[in-house]
Length: 288
Image (cartoon, rainbow, N blue to C red; front, side, top):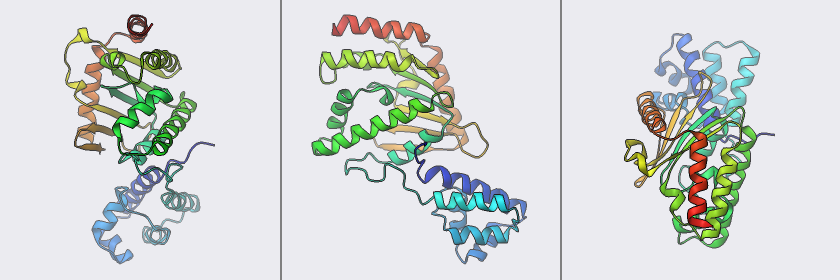
């Protein structure tokens, strides 16, 4: 059984459908708000996937929009119920990174992910010992038990994503500096680079290394992921890992900007096979 997608994806899908139904009925936000006895901003948030949909409100809106199709009503009410689901990760440790729940929701439903990792190995390819050391340094005040939980959560995500390959495509660019930066020990790095190569050999994964010799690129300023979807309901979204805090944007102009940045970055990388050869070279030179 696939993992729960949490509330984000069902809320987005429900909001998209409700907006289409309202517009098809020729009604304004104020008309829907009057029916729900609330402000138009609440209906707007609901349509944007930001509000918490109550089943009663969804039924009232479907009645207002004169939706008679039983299957459609059932599906949309099911989305309203699913929007209450906090996801399998809801029982998370105190050190839980902000917005990680939303990230996992997007990851669980995307058809393609384009990612750049600048300072460390791509998260979905990290081995537990490497991952533990990263989390320990990111959350220095957290007890070891919470770090263990975070590592377990990442491992679970890795398994889910690997099971989705085929319906999911991953193109990941890693800066060469991540291969040289020793995390934990040389032995850990050797095992980590072996695992990175194993990860890259899965069908549906295109791994590239952005080498030192290529120089500078706008695309290496921060870590980011572009989530894309193969339907008209879900919005493509860019996630940025910034020093001032993580940020998500589903604005078309923002997503397009980062897609162009990533496309340019990818064009300056060696191909998949040459990138794996570079990983092997760094491993032999630095860690054997």
